[in-house]
Image (cartoon, rainbow, N blue to C red; front, top):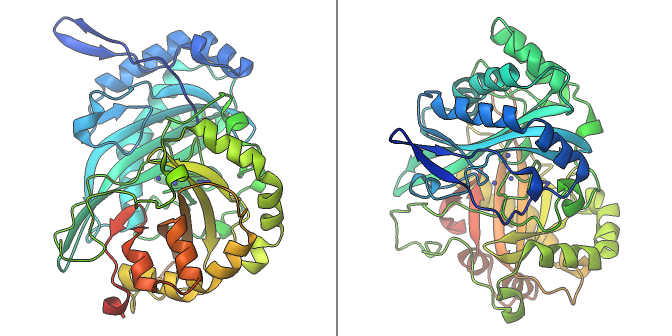
Length: 449
């Protein structure tokens, strides 16, 4: 889910482990030989020794909770030791060369006590600030890159009534190179906030106004950030600089498409019709259910790009598409999904609604009425398994407004049946995966109303 949309990568090499003095060291950087893009390959080769030093420094640093570099974000702690640990590399992002640092932070924050902004702020203070210092100490000021980015996955725990679940959130921060060095010298949060306000920040793939003080985020539109670095029409494979990028799991709008959903969600109410051991819904389209690669998704994207472009042209006004993340084919559990992001024009009052009620109304009152017309615009012959709909809801919270992402991963066949009035709204929800800010929830539409 740094969701995004939303440059993705594929490498065949394995992480290298070795034993020395009774301790295990891990290679934290990608080998230049594995990189296709000549600019990225040159940067990786030129600064390879510094990347090794940065990796060693991060490994030796004691964070409040365990942190591990990784090419995959959102991994369970039990799976991190065997995962590809090369979390340092140069990537192409928004037509810039970015040195990115990616990893998993094993902190589980209580969502009932800390707001999303407070959770992201803690991760920023506990992980990002120390790593900005480590990177700036090793990389020269005139390094041949444009920006330095950080993508950190952490956990959020929520208990509500009969439900007890733990999901992942992803914080992404991209600092211009000059700002990164200035940030490392900042005297306090006021100076850091000034730099942060003009930098790119995302939480779960949505652009975010991270506030380093207080419970609520800042309103992004008031920060005056340049739109020059927002998502472009660069095809995903070109943007990454790699030919077949299906294994880097990053947030939707940054260094890659999110292809992993919470696999360790614990829902205590097993009688709920939405409860399922599977993380993603089963598709009834046999052709689309076969194991796919990112190359397959890219081919589908290229084949139907003219139709998708046509859909985008009137999508903002007709369907309320966001302008920075056009519809695109992505991978979800090795099957292809069409990912579409909307902005709900109707705000919610957090004092009178819960995450369940907002998710239910997002589906019933915003998404459901559009499904039939939307399907008429989708390539009829395209074979893919799911739709991945993300609805960005505006929350009229005091003292500052914020946003919330409701995500619905729905089988293609079920969506057609719903559009044809063959199944009810609850039946389609029962066949789907519903997430709020990256946390999977069980949703009974009538019950929450």
